[in-house]
Image 1: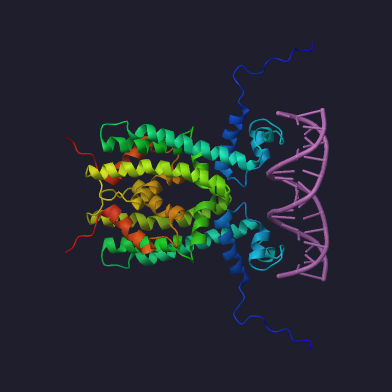
Image 2: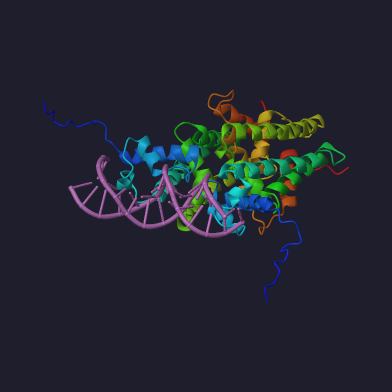
Length: 201
Length: 201
DNA sequence: CCTACCGATCGGTAGG
DNA sequence: CCTACCGATCGGTAGG
């Protein structure tokens, strides 16, 4: 009756990605410092020593999560930045993309860990993230410049961009997936808040 | 040569307040979970067991810091809310007060701990904080209503208030005391960003 | 990827 | 408020 050990999974295992996902969720929920290796191992059905087969340190797991976060974010917003036919349309698409990553199921753990746990990286790892973040912010600065060029906003300064980032990133604190507002609606309302209602032609 | 033990301090010691201050600074810098009792004890010149003479648990220290944060914040903004002669003047005073607590030397550790570490409180402690927070937000909602009543903004909804809170609270991430902008300037620029430049009479 | 384990450190306490 | 300490837990490793 000894069964041959079956190839347990037809899909590729990719346990590393599983660990990154689980770590992201736990870092988001409990914070980096309060999350233990045992929490992460448990979440993917491993014993406590096994995650170290995939990552040298807990720090490296954080680094992987944060880089995944900034990568997804940049990709989504870059795609949106030239998607429309007007500065306002592009801007609204960027808002949707940013909020989609930040609040949506696929991205939120990575994005939230990026926003709130990056400080636990050490200086060189942080520098790596900051470099990506700078490129990200350039996209937004350009979007504001275009809006100003079209006469839709008065202030396209760096501080204005930081106010905007604050309004966006603070949504993490109050948005609830089962709440009364969709991501789409929030994006539209933020655009109206900053620009005013779109003019009917 | 045995000296009489002198009354070491003329000012009241108030070691409890010292602990709260040190805890606030460390919770802000390293986060609640990454801060140890020994860190806190060290910062106030005690041995590791002694903080427990003033607080039953590390949790209670967090609670004290967070309540101090919301208390200072509420007090400062409440004072500002009726300080001026116009809705715009009141609003700008509230912005200054909020940013002063959040970014200024006296309040920032408490305020930042309030914003970022409250989740480590347990449900009943958190409920206590949320009750204070609700009262705080009412002040801002009223300020927005007054601005709208004066025709200065178009949207005074709850979401608008959350966008505003985001722009304000995100300053923690980028403001530097030795940077190019004063708290005053940031407050004024945010007011202009939301309302537009003040009209000359 | 598991078993078995290590040294370090943690929050907290007893007794003074 | 200190001394001396405890049990639990932590990140990480050796050897398979």
